[in-house]
Amino acid sequence: VRHSPDGRVLAVGYFSRAGVNLADVDLYDTTTRARVGRLEFRDIHFGNLRTVGWSDDGRALYAAGSAYNAPGRFIVERIAWPSGNVESMVVPGDSILDFAALPGGRIAFAGFDATWGVLDGLKVVSRSESPVLRVVAASALEISADASKVQWRDAESVTHSFALASRHVGDGD
Image 1 (cartoon, rainbow, N blue to C red):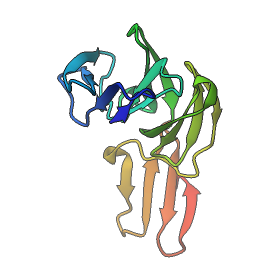
Image 2: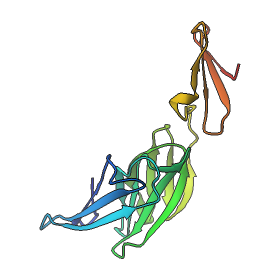
Image 3: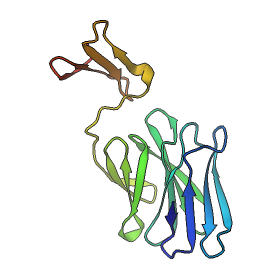
Image 4: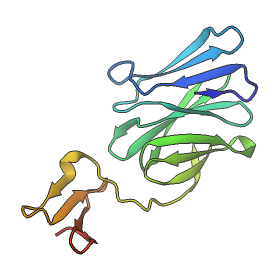
C-alpha cells in the first residue's frame, strides 16, 4: 500500500491473485475512499504484485512482487500517471519486496535475494549482486542418501552443494 506523493491516491497491491494469469492493483481516492481504478495485468503467469511504489514526482507507479513469467524473470510493471499507460520490464533475481522513491523520478527496489537496484523508467541503472545462491524450486533440492550433503540447482541450472559436517559450499558433487 502506498500513497501518491500528493496524497490524493492510494495504490494497493495484493498477495492473492485475481485469476489465472491475472494480478490486480487497485487505486483509491483518499478523500472519497472510492476505488477510482483497477489495473489488471495479464502477463503475470505466477506470483503476485503485492509491492507498489510511486516515483517522487508522482508521474509513475511501479508494481512488483513475486510475479514472474519464467523462472528468474521477475516482472516490474510501470504505470504512467495519470494516463495509466503500462509498460513491463523483467528484473533478474527474485521477488521485489519494496520500492523507495529517489530524486529525478527514479525508484530503488529491494529483492528477496538480498539485492537492491535502481530503475530509471524501464532501465535498471544500478543493481547489486546477490550474496545468496537461489534455489529455483523444491524439486531442485536433493539430500544425499546418508543425509550428509544437500544439493540444489540455481536459476541457470548450475548445481551447488553444501556438506553438513564440514560446512563447505561446493559446486555439484
